[in-house]
Image (cartoon, rainbow, N blue to C red; front, side, top):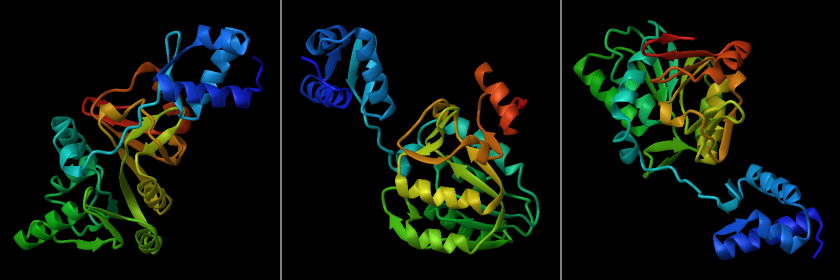
Length: 263
């Protein structure tokens, strides 16, 4: 059997969906091509997020979904708390900031005591309620602007075209961005396309874009691209970067901030 590359890849996907796994040597015999050709096909399909290469072949691509906010709040709690403290330390009196709805970004709100005359924009329902409570107690004396739009009950956030339109009217000093993946090759990514578009708008409208992400998000790519790494200014996380990150970070002038220091 001899098939053109695209037809061959289509047949590979059919076999993969039927079997759950394909073996490179078996595909080579089936299509009467070299194993190198099959590996190239598998490489291309992996880049298209259609499968995952494993030793000797490939398996079906596992599609991850974003857990609900309440589940996200319960994992990596200590790491997120440390990140919240570090990120809050970057906020100065009189700053205008936007804080998104991520469980890591929410930790920043808990660390704002003593900050004076802030203006905070957010699309997070929990952040909104927390800041209202702080206003009642007298521990937050700034302005609070809730970004309206379509509400997700699962994630307790607002996103979509209405929220993007509201955000277009504001320019901020700093944006604090939660993400689901951070990688050198793919930049910062999200599970959700609408969230990715909204976050992209946050970055465009801020003088300084700050990614807050625990170490489980590093070297990970999810489905919806937010931005390239050179479009952000800082990554605040709970661990030092691996050696492969150091030269690219310097080249892109992106700061990496973690509890023991910064790069």
